[in-house]
Amino acid sequence: VQLQASGGGLVQAGGSLRLSCAASTTTFRLNVMGWYRQAPGKEREFVACIDTGGSTEYGDSVKGRFTISRDYAKALVYLQMTSLKPEDTAVYYCTAAWTWKGSDYWGKGTQVTVSS
Figure 1 (tube, rainbow, N blue to C red):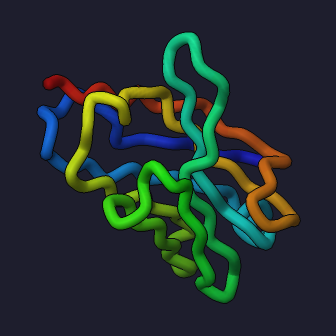
Figure 2: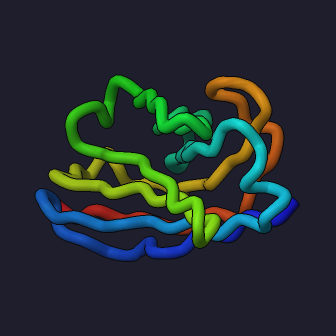
């Protein structure tokens, strides 16, 4: 199982970033792909997930601002983040799972820092 997240960086509050997650073909066949994040001193938090049918779910703190999508041809999962806030600062992890909102497999994270 291979997951590789990229696209993190430093952005000002109100700005946007798009994270990408490259998955091996085998991993991409897992039912649910998702994103979690972890801020310093805090527990990991569910951000979003998407299944093979395109159904999505979002954490309350990102609803209306973040959008998850998947490119089946390229085995990529994206997290489009808009209206970023300083509290969105965290390491973002791409996940793959067999169950809804699950996180059976984790990739290395990518740092997102939002300055005020």
